[in-house]
Length: 85
Image (cartoon, rainbow, N blue to C red; front, top):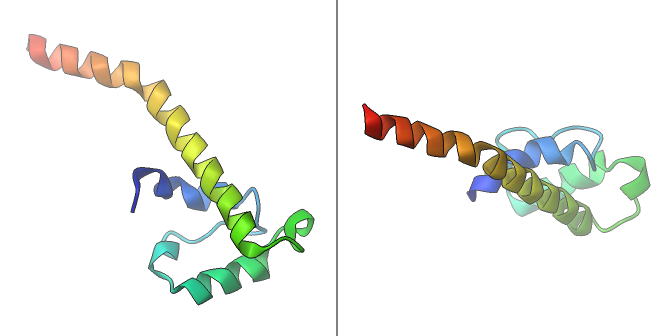
C-alpha cells in the first residue's frame, strides 16, 4: 500500500454514496468493481467504474500531499527539539 492509499476511503465518499471500508485494499478486483458500481453517486453512475475510482485515487493523492505539506514544519520542529535535548 502506498502512503496516500490510507486516504482513499475518505476520498471515495466524494464519488460514491458510501465510503470504502478500511479493508478495501484486500478485496479482489471484481469485488471492488462491484462495490464501485453499486455505490456510484448519481452524477457518476453512468461513468466507467475504473474512471470514477481513479478520481477518488487522485483526490487521495491530493489529500496526502496537503497533509504532508501542512505537517512538514511541525515534523521539522520536533526533530530540531529532539536534537536540542
